[in-house]
Image (cartoon, rainbow, N blue to C red):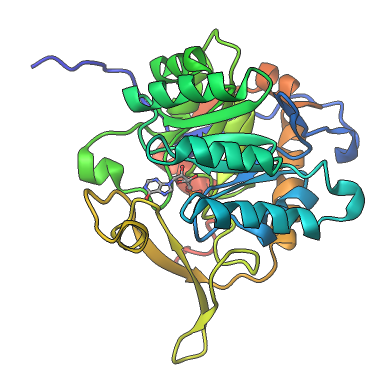
Length: 349
Ligand code: IMP
């Protein structure tokens, strides 16, 4: 039996960025902004995932205030999804009303075109085709139909894909940006044996010669991973678990017997989510879990932004395009990985 490919596929922990000579004297000289095209501009290129335990109004407001955006999930009726967009607008400060950077997720079957139309009528800045396997004929049909329906001027994000062929095809079918990668709650690799290590996916997709932006989606655990994803070629990152458990996520806070507070976080392909939204489940490729209650999101977003700015400065990069050009990765061994962590905590004295 021949191996189809023997290329080494790298994960975030397999690499570090080599520090470069820097002339940046203050981190305020750095711009993190990213233009995804067709009016989707982010001051901090970070997007909250279209998941029912992550992105509704409060999340969208917090993400906007931090310079990012949110994709309102589609696990609701069209009316409910549009109500979330409307409420978010109403909560924006007045001068931010039309600038509100908010996207809406749709699927590829059933009412997806009606949903897209309704979202457009509520002035979402972009539409996100949100399915597990984006390199698929149903996505091709949906994307081509949607593009005809909304015209060239509307930004369409689509995914997820994990390969260069995938991103090229999505671009050819009409996508302006593509979600690539897999998440912390994802069990697709265990369930199906398919998938790609996160960083490799970005490096692979960054070889595209199409005019398409790359959204590194899932697997981001800290600002170091954000910097690595952007350095590898991403134009923005999409995150779920980084924001899970905050006040701004939908759902209630619940308490343990010992008083510890928690919130829910679950994959949209988990058995629990499928049962709730479809009343049945097929192959489940995600898990449902609880995460500690983590308080307000703005504090977390500020830390992430500061860490990302610092990361740019270690590469001597004032902008995202400079980071793309200057970043130099080195691979590390597992000893290097252990050394990279704050290793005093596990030291035996
Ligand atoms: P995280 O930031 O690592 O937690 O990953 C969030 C991303 O995981 C989302 O943006 C989706 O792309 C992906 N995702 C959401 N639900 C599922 C699931 O049930 N299975 C696999 N991936 C999922």
